[in-house]
Length: 356
Image (tube, rainbow, N blue to C red; front, side, top):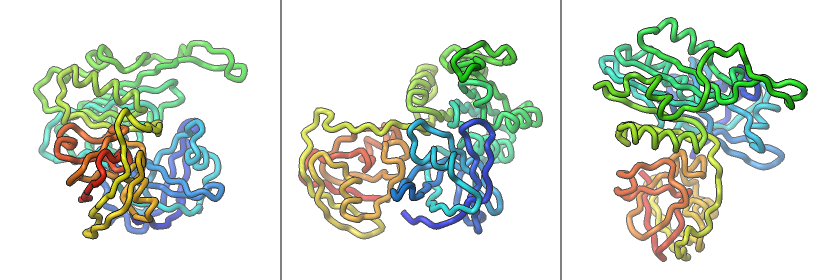
């Protein structure tokens, strides 16, 4: 993975604990970006190199913009929200990611976007491009936040809805519609909010997505915390949307270690082909393939290391592994032998994988 150094060119704070960070780009015309993708961001914090992924929410002639929300105990997010200044240097790589739209001017589809909180950042750009480049399609956005003050890009969505009123339909819902006072200890209902309240569930989707039963080809995009994505994917499957038409991007994935999963892991020899070069290294029992490659100084592709982004996807040629977590691959990809190196532990003494 190749990183290059750039600088912070702008910082905005649309809502509390969220920063929109502009990153200077000298050649954005050559920045091979598809709406919905992310960049890998690397900074040194207190002497420790930290890497995270952030969705690109907009791109201009000389700047890309990412959205960052403070996460409790999040080393990177707290650093970016509290300490980042104009002119600071950042290391980035990418873009990457398979959570994308590819607009076609003559195409007519029904797009349903389901977002929670800062999960709106990739969807913002996706909707913007669809409005500009796929005028025959309809777009529904069901956007959940805790409170009205947490809604990112509300002014932009409201303006687009007025301009593209026959094409774009935005429905906000609040899950914690209260005002706080006395240092947050007392709560009262926010009587100024006249929109929807409650979580996005089956009845909410049926009520607010009338095209559910239409004959239009549908594409569903889900972006939010892990539980939100998993629950809504199941709901959409139950509502009859085929698996291949449901796309997910995970935010705030808990990187929990699963030591055994009941599997008999073993020491192994791993043969891998990367960038046309084939090498063999040892993998320790219960060690993940990516961990082993990094331990041996291999610059193997990776990003989130939590089974969500698919940056580390590779194909197993021989041998057996078990995956702790898989939030990125679909059933067909698994049947075809694809695995996530960041989540795969050896079950056989010899394993061969190949990167595309």
